[in-house]
Length: 164
Image (cartoon, rainbow, N blue to C red; front, side, top):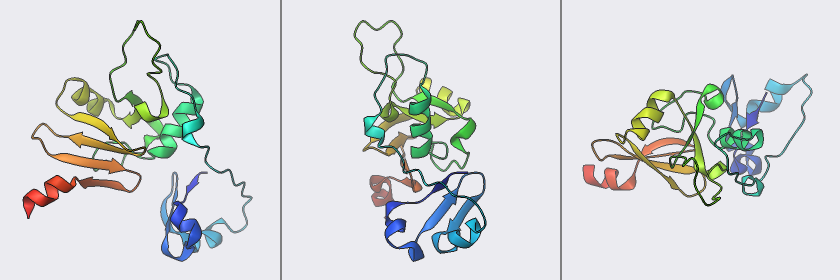
């Protein structure tokens, strides 16, 4: 069982939410009661930046785990599908037989996506780009942009301003 807590929640447990994989969200304050009577092993999350990129299409287990920790749900706007059984998609199409070793497969170069989303991206209907370490910016076929990150999905600031 994996329990995800934001850093802010560790500082002030009364105000945060814990997300338990396979179970769902729960207030951080009720976590001790939920875990009462169980054995708990605390393993801090490995610093993703220390995991090296590789020059292969196949994804090493350490990279796979780090991407799924970063994106517990599908990295597509407003999706609630668990990333556990989704494919990890290269944000920039993998180039087979590339002459230079560029580390194309990395924690920051992958995101969990369903096959339909992968096809929509590959065929150019949807575009995606990384925005910082843990967010993606998706552009729809209509030109609307959405930000997807650890706290969910939202329209981009430019979209919100257009509506006002």
